[in-house]
Amino acid sequence: MISDAELAELEYSVGLALRSGDASRLRLLGEGEISLVLGAGATVGADPVWACKRLPPFATESAADLYAVGIERYVDTLVGRGIKVLDTDVRRVSGTDGGVVLYCVQRGLPTATLAVNIAHTDRERAASLIVEIVDAALGTVDTTVGLDAQLSNWAIIDDQLTYFDITTPLLRGPDGTSLLDSEVFLVSMPWALRAPIRRFVLPTIIERYHDPRTVTLDLASNLRKEGLAGLVAVVLNAVAGRIEPPLTEREVGQDRRSDARTWATLQAVRRVDRAWQRSIRRRPYPFLLPTRSSH
Image 1: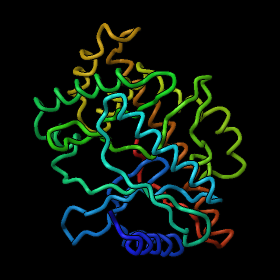
Image 2: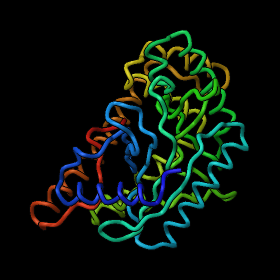
Image 3: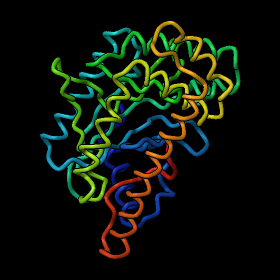
């Protein structure tokens, strides 16, 4: 896997970007709500050797270690339920401005292997992929195990459907208590808003990924975001008779708009806080934010 020196150099570059406010020298491969995917070890114009998913800094080593254990347990659980997961190395480094940073390091994937790109170039193959994803989701998701089944989280590796979005370990105990450290979602939010978001927003978001119906609804609605609205009907047909009440095109459209508003609002709040920290408090903003909403 990536060497300690290479990972430390990447974190150093992140620190420079945070202090300067200029992330143009970082190679951004993907954007999530709590992590950004950075390329490392690649030459200009080539697929990256490594895809490094950087989580927000943890205040203590023990908190970082606990989260890392959660990721490893989540991967084991998904594999146990029949999902192939891309090999991932969870690494810990000292943050450039304090704290402990976790990187989930995976081999960089050729763009031609990504399910989203396959869907744009081969609609017939896309339909079979979506059916396979629906089957995987319905065979995995329950009250204890969650899954973000969006098309953008899958690739075809060695002719097998492979999942690679494991930075959010969606696990619950037998009593329904989430085993996910929700503070990783909240740390980049303004302090005054963390309590209401923790109480009123996060439970609803997390619940979506533990309900087979809303997981497949999310899969369908995000096809619209990816410019693949013509494939929504494939999801609806694949879940017909397997979830109740049945999904409809109208509901998919409504969900897409609602989800986009929720994440856009959260991103706007973080951007306002970033501007305030930089302009008023005159200190670096300690988080990398997506350049746009990933939802």
